[in-house]
Image (cartoon, rainbow, N blue to C red; front, side, top):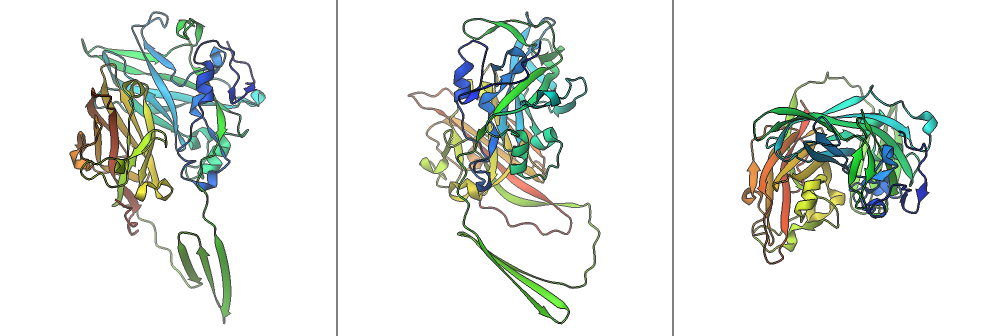
Length: 449
């Protein structure tokens, strides 16, 4: 069974032929994108919209969280869970929700680029030839996460600009994007008898009831096909005005050039003079430099500044989220920002992503995934009922220090709180971030705490 080679545009989203209560709502909900809110150069650019993810082998059924299962028969599984896809920065993030009664031992995402959805004649053949992302097991067994960089999907350098990466992911602008072949597999351990068993992605659904629940699926499938539509970045900040002047002067055979650049917020000048130079071979030794404090951010609608709280130490920059247990069980995520003084994310450095998940019992896990050259030296997570009493990271629900510059960390936070009197649960994700620099290179200035 194959999807039709072209997905028609209908209003704000891709056309859906599949029935069910989820069809229109998800596609009409086109929220912001973290890079749009921080990079003025992305105004008008198109970005992959996570709310338009569809399963092509299921007649383009709208689904952000494809199911996975344990058992010999996908129509009679021993247990089920899901993998929720998110778009954070220039990565697709995969959040594996827990299976009730099991803990993850390992997991992998196998993927292959299908191609431009508007050019089916150029689509790549389906797997088996494909690439794989290995996802590290959770320290707590309460779900895990891993990410697929846009640069890997497009086969370009990891240093490619965000604007060029978005252009590659959205080759048709504000409409159909790319298609991907995906499969999920791994092993879990039973909490009852410690036996280890395998899980896999559920085959395409062949029948749904009136609520949209799958009631029958294909007997097997080596992969699923996922498509998305792109949306236009409309929330980018205005770029500061820039003027520049260049003056060149000669003196004998020596030439020097002075260039100055002035913006509404900064002024820089540089002078270079030709001279003899020698090349020093690079050293492989890396130095760890303290870079600054990071806080997890989700979106303008989901993130509230700490300074709205009256607790001790809350008059500072940073954010908290107020997810429901149901949202955490589906998985939430966002960028990690360093140096967003006065909560101005246009000044911040995006150093990676964070995810938060909850299992069926309500135990919450937060995962940090940093981009090179950034690493973690400390992590702190707070999960409590509003109002927040203390905003100092040392007073949070859980914290770990002396991590030794690791690129990723998973933290068992504890049970989702039961809040009374209409209060909401507040989640703060914090980290102390280092930057690794080559030997002999001076450490950069530390960002605002």
